[in-house]
Amino acid sequence: MYNMVMKNAFDHPPSPLPGKEGGERGRDGGYPQPPTKGAMPLWTPQQPVRTIQTTGNPEGYLDSEALGTPIALYIHIPFCETKCPYCDFNTYEGIEPLMPAYIDALAQEIRLWGAFLTQGQATPLHQPISTVFFGGGTPSYLPSENIQRLLDATRAAFSLAPDAEVTLESNPGDVTPSRLEMWKAAGINRVSIGVQSLDDGLLQLLGRRHNAQAARQAYQNARDAGFNNLNLDLMYGLPHQSMDQWRSTLTETLTLAPEHLSMYCLTLEEGTPLDAWVRLGKVPEPDPDLAADMYLLAEELAGDAGYDHYEISNWAMPGRACRHNLTYWRNQQYLGVGPGAHSYLSGYRFATLKSPRQYIQRINQWASEGATRLLKKESPGRRSPSGGELGVSPRYTSHPLPGQEGDRGMVESVFHHPARPLNLANLQHNGPLDTVDAIDAPTEMGETMMMGLRLGQGVSKASFLERFGVGLQEAYGPQIDALEQLGLLEWRQGWLRLTPRGRLLGNEVFQRFLT
Image (cartoon, rainbow, N blue to C red; front, side, top):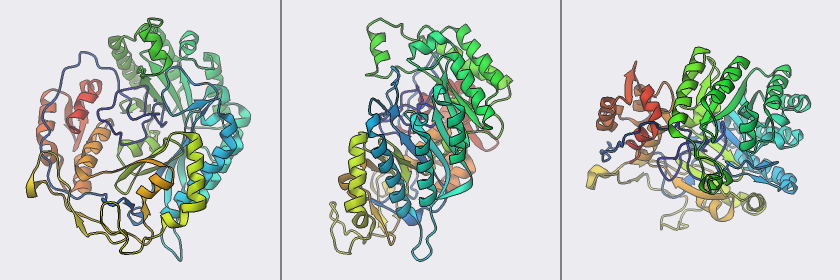
């Protein structure tokens, strides 16, 4: 996709940023966002938020006992046969010799995380997993037996729900009857096909390996193989793309009637070949006003065809919203494995390093040298880098809130170290992690607003109060009132949501809750 897509409103993204449906962006930034047409500047100083409980702790310990409810699992596959000129994801072509070692390391990482997140000692209860998403990269490019192996590792390490949604991203040329049969046998029950366009000229511009007929055939192959939950990725706002071309692709795609559609506006990402071609004048710069009209056409035609516009860039038949991506939009917990993958667990967001070669080395190091040491409780009295004792945490800690001073700016949090804490700082030095951020309550609140407002239903007043102990109006009253007056937010049956105009100006809305 994170999107081909909008520029992020803040520096450190709160989730694996799908640039295709559910996929990971190769850098910080980029939630899918329709282009802005006739945008107005929207900004006011951040208002103070009330004191509430935070979820993280400052010593870098991930609390396994804070888990137990189902989480989502993202599995990153960084391999591509060819890398598209618009893509800035953490993906690579020409590194196929790494595949065997990479699959070994990825299966090992799944096992290591499963061991930590498993609850209890005498009678272990595996951490439940509600959804699995193979993203990339091109997961369908892997030999199919590797998909089977990774899902077998997942089932051994976690408790995979019987009705788990298990998605595999694919290129049309890989969606063959033999592969589909093996994917289905492995446990894949949802296939996402990167169609992008049904215009051969535009597909060539995008550097895609398939043509329109191959995309049609891939869809039919998946149907013939018995898959009844399919997503098609489409892109609009492309150089040289006319409204007639977009309408033609939309009309034919809707005739196919996939259960789910992800439609993303192209964003020229710095450092990509397509961005360079535009800068050099070899390719015209996309017209943002035309792209906005294309978005509105997609809303109209998909709505007429019975699709629910449940998220800014996603449409689904009733009951077929992508459950995995809903975890992101609801700001719930997920684990990402593989290079560059992001995770959000127990009040921490963390990401693995991006280099596949370094990732393999670090996973092997974690498994062979550091697993026991990094997963066990440290002895009381050992000092942390910040001066606190490892294994003996204070019961209370305080963090200042933005725009507040003194006692009014303190957040009280309660946490403890479980029998088997995992020191994330150690995993940065001796394991696969690249970045680790403790998420305080104000940040979690702001991210919950930004992500939740992407959904068609918006943010639930009751759920927000239950989660944070403070009401939406108490936390963000001035922002909400101002955005209502601008016609960008509205209340509907206890939910705060974007208006149709607000969906076109989403970034400006989100910034109100993050600055």
